[in-house]
Length: 83
Image (cartoon, rainbow, N blue to C red; front, side, top):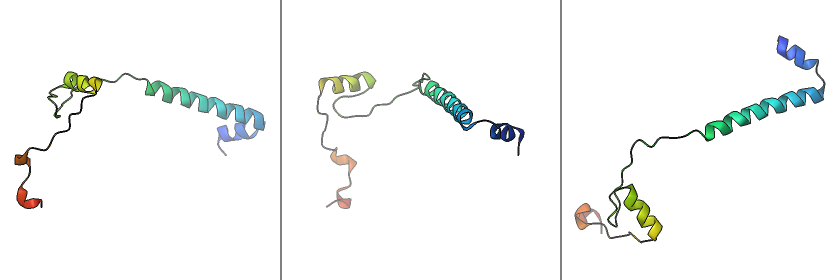
């Protein structure tokens, strides 16, 4: 047995449970802190219908609730492949 395991074996079940809860609480706090770390957006690209040519235009499209669905341009598809 390791020294830590030997010491843990001498503790009451209540004390062992308390120490396990402390360890879980510390782990939880580390995970929560990592979740709240700031992020950096280093680039964004928009290629969408409805005149959307950037993030601002995309946001306006969403905020206004506009429908930007359009037919695909015919030059995009080879008619021989689709029947």
